[in-house]
Amino acid sequence: MCTLTGKRKIIKNTVFVVAVFVSSSLGLCAQSYTKAQMDTLKMVLIPMCKMMLPPDVKAELKAMNISEDCYCEVSTDVTIEVMINQLNKDKKTAEDVDMAYYLKFMQDVQDENSALHNEFLSKLEGQLTRKCYQKKSNVIVKGPANGIIPLLKVGNNHKLEVVLGNSTKYYLMDTGADICVISDKYANELRKNGIIKMSKFQGNRTLVLGDNSIVDAAVYLVDGVKIGNFTLDNVEFAVIDGEIGFLLGQSVLKAFYGYHVNNNDSTLELVK
Image (cartoon, rainbow, N blue to C red; front, side, top):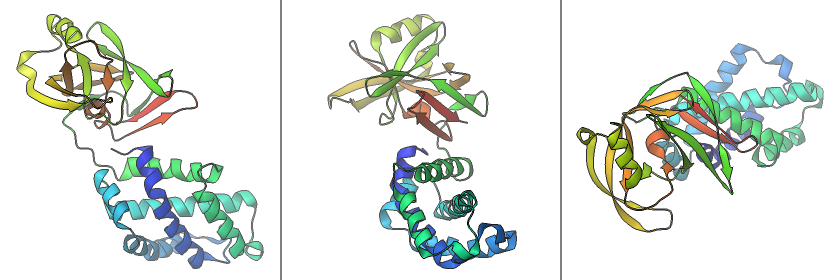
């Protein structure tokens, strides 16, 4: 799954691409770049990016199901775009662009509290999501190309509304959970309404909950899971005995090409 956390982990490597771009473009002003120059520059930067990928970044890309080729192409594109935007914003010319300027640019890109870093990260995340991520899921997603889901902030966590049949409940969004979790009491209600069916029973599974307790759960595939304007079929739900808080995990999130939690306005962006 293509997440903000993954991008934060690999952005340090992308700065290597910035460094190569600096040595390749020193003395040029934003207005002088032509498409031919950009294409030539990319032909140099992309192979160098691949050579500089450290093992932990390669592992992170593999976990997110993103190819190294696509990552390096996108990170190079984003680096060039953000740098040109910054040069234009600062109204720089060939005469007043020097090494000190580029070093400051690199520092700002690495500073998680800077506007430039967050612009870079947002563009990188969006481009990786649209161009590189190959989802691995049997879930069928019906609805718009993307959507914004309102979240309910509870402490440091978020809950969101999930509709199953005529029943609406709030689930805690847990990106670390492999599967959605509901109680056996609620599952019995859903069985009566034909939402959970024995024909969709997938067997039992051992789960480790957030408090590190280990429980056995019955797993079902559930159709008609409604989140915002999206409807999902073949979503895995784990049914656990006792009174528990419901969880929305990766069995929903990995069905999308990407997702992003905006903490400023408490919303979840989903990209199909």
